[in-house]
Amino acid sequence: MSSSAFRSDQGTFLLGVGELIDEWTHKKSVNDLAEAMALNVDQVWMLSGDGTKVLVPIRQVQADDRILVETGNLIPLDGVILEGDCMVNQSSLTGESVPVPKGPGKSVYAGTVIEEGSCSIRVTKAAGSNKYDQIVRMIEDSEKLKSDVESRAAHLADRLVPWCLGLSALTYLLTRNATRAVSVLMVDFSCALKLSMPLSVLSAMREASRYHITVKGGKFMEKVADATTVIFDKTGTLTNACPTVVDVIPFNGQDADEMLRVAACMEEHFPHSMANAVVRAAREKGLDHEEMHSEVEYLVAHGIATKIGRKRAVIGSYHFVFEDEGTRIRKQDREAFEEIPAKYSCLYLAIGGVLSAVICISDPLRPEARDVIRRLHEVGIEKCVMLTGDSRRTAEAIAEEVGVDDFRAEVLPEDKSDYIRSEQALGHTVIMIGDGINDAPALSLADVGVAIGSGAMIAREVADITIAAEDLTELIFLKQLSDALMRRIQHNYRFVMSFNGALIGLGAVGLMPPGTSAMLHNGSTLLLSIRSMTNLL
Image (cartoon, rainbow, N blue to C red):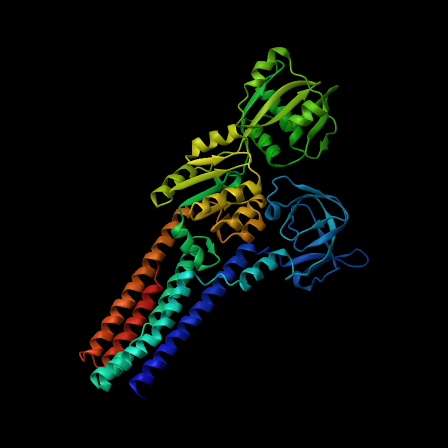
């Protein structure tokens, strides 16, 4: 076998290895994402024609079968409620923090949880066809894996092939020496460029997954490396989306602890995020809130009403307590009421038609948030911005506390998109970080959309990168990893062009025999490929 044929076979073998690694990494990335989205439900209770419950594997359930889901359980399949009323937590799908009431005829979706009640469901989509599966297939079928730098490397390698052939022919014409011409022919740029670049990108994606970061395509790591502006949603991103009682302000001569006890007694019947905050605050203070009232009435999206003794007691939103219920504030309490900090969300408690307490609730910042903003500046981000639907006064206080460079308050989803467009028009590469359904348009529009792992499913669907919910410092690692990837790619470019260029030059002047050229070329390609597969950080 001639050395030229050997080199060709060697190059074909190396490219084949590269394609196998490419395919394996793609499948690994999709599998990691699938595991993160998995419902982990293997069996369900199916209802037979006579109403008997039978525990069957989920894969046996087909469309139009009936299943039973009870309190505290995950809804495993998309369907429509046939019987029963329940409160469904849809935060995984929509980002809503408050459970939604569902009854007969209402649609329910895989991945949501029944917090109260139970129901029988007619399945509309069997396992493999629900929303979770659609998202995984969308990612699997996408063409996002290839990065721009990989494409540029492949195109450059293809463009250099005729130049290498031409240089070999020119060497022969000028020297009439076939050995020199073959020495030039033994070396090209194709193998090294086409192998090392994708291997570097795929290795970086694999390294990111070890730190609970799912990257849907190499080109997004390039964009992260180029990023100059990072935009944060507030709730659930800079904050924990875990409301906490920070103050109880009594009115009408009441005692603060007693009013917290009353509020906890009312709120414990209807668990949602703010109610849980009240009950938790009472428990932390050791306040015993045994039943002291008659049957409670829950008014969806408004509040709770009951009777304590002979007096009507209500707790809920400003609109419910003051406008619907006509609650009044004593003149001597008016000044204190107007001084309540606007940065808090409030629950209003009234007894006997008179304001008795205001419970101030805050969504505290993540403990690492301020440090993450500082470190983002250190790793090259020029501008950190917070966008929130909160009032300007609340947003201003949070922005100052966390240390962002700019903020926008009272924004709607379309306002977030408009802000991103304005930054991009100024030539900035924008990273958007969010967790809710209202962030989805902005995540999709940004150069890189980063979703928080515990956020709404639609946010994770449209985002380019997903990070775990536990710690925002993963953003710093993502930026450092992306920067290191680009440095490695530039190094690979320089090495391939200079080393192979030197081999061609030495072969052309007769200082490098064909066998040596082939050995050094293939050996350097193999070593560079192995190095490209090592960890970056």
